[in-house]
Image 1 (cartoon, rainbow, N blue to C red):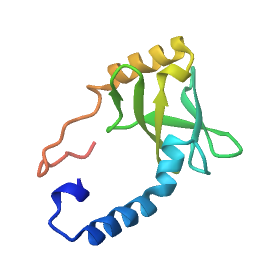
Image 2: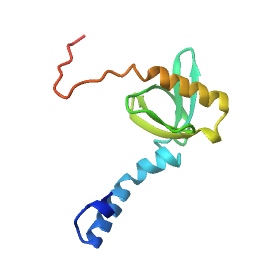
Image 3: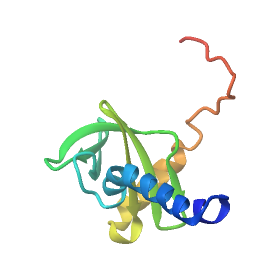
Image 4: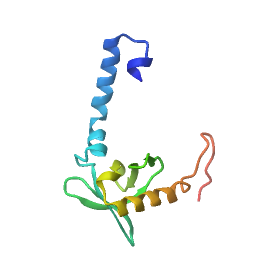
Length: 128
């Protein structure tokens, strides 16, 4: 978008794109390439909830699917997972996964679609 829609000289547009890509590189490596300490290596269900193995040591932590998770076509899922340490993102390719597990995850995501409240920008949320 920056390369075609911004009215700046070409070198300035290229510099903006390179800076943006450089800043986002750790997130790209974690979400798409599954490298680094923030990468989600696996998801697993149990009676206690949804667990993710995160990082090089594959530490299991309890996660919740957060707002902003969505399905991209038939074979891709983008999940935002809330952990006690913060938000993790992962892109899941359905063609490289066990089909039953991927379908179960799609059903779970579909069931959670209406669980996230839509808030107007100036809407007050009463304390609970």
